[in-house]
Length: 159
Image 1 (cartoon, rainbow, N blue to C red):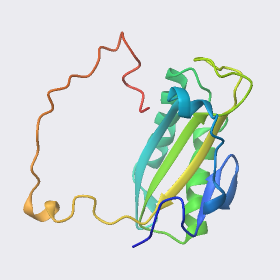
Image 2 (image 1 turned 90 degrees about the horizontal axis):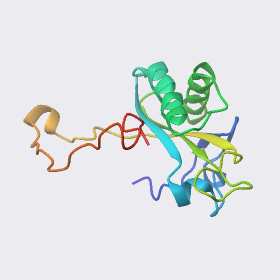
Image 3 (image 1 turned 180 degrees about the vertical axis):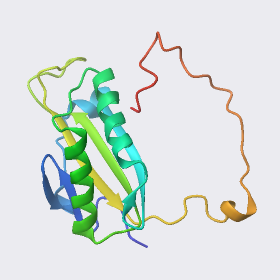
């Protein structure tokens, strides 16, 4: 068992550099904790290659833009950061989580456009998410909930 996600060995890429896993922290008054101003991507790396990695990086930036945030890294820079994080941890098969969020700054209102947009990329070794469902089949259900109309929120953003 790897333990709690906040108490592991390894490296996380955060705001342009690799940091020790336990040092990857944000302040309690980070805007995203209060107003959910964050976007993320969940990606799988198989045999050293992130499945559709560049497309995920592009979508992360698009989702951020839909929420009025400009990620301060290009898709190519995000790709390089994901590769650096995987290499630093010695992983070839892993789950990769990129997250961009509006950080702590001068504003605590809903918009907070003056607050910095931050970016972190973490990862962990994660086996088959669905267990033996790949060979035995999975039980599915249809949700009673409906996606909100695109006119109400940017529902195409992964936020």
